[in-house]
Length: 125
Picture 1 (spheres, rainbow, N blue to C red):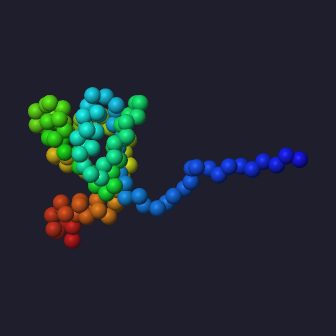
Picture 2 (cartoon, rainbow, N blue to C red; picture 1 turned 60 degrees about the horizontal axis):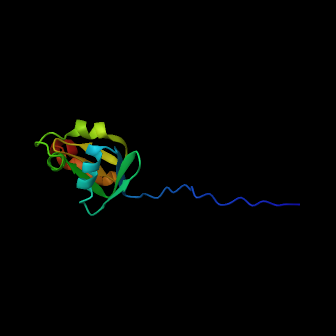
Picture 3 (cartoon, helix red, strand yellow; picture 1 turned 180 degrees about the vertical axis):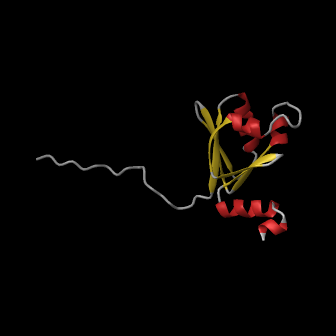
């Protein structure tokens, strides 16, 4: 009689908080430049894939629009939240769009504190 043993699955559930956040960008001219700008941050990892670019961080990362506009060879204000959304396909973590940047947080409490700091005192109390 032949007996078979199933191999252990590499896909396991892990509910431990990772403190990570990230986005996938289109692998096009804009996405490549955005990834280059983001790669300047110490806590950011860039992974180039055939049809997309992953931008992952531990903690927090800021997509500063004017830095990206400059790297694209465009005037200040060219790259904004709508350009970001157009080039991004998915994200994980907490995302906050502001006038001058999009901020990603891997930790909900840190994002809540950041939002609370922006609120008037009577609202955050």
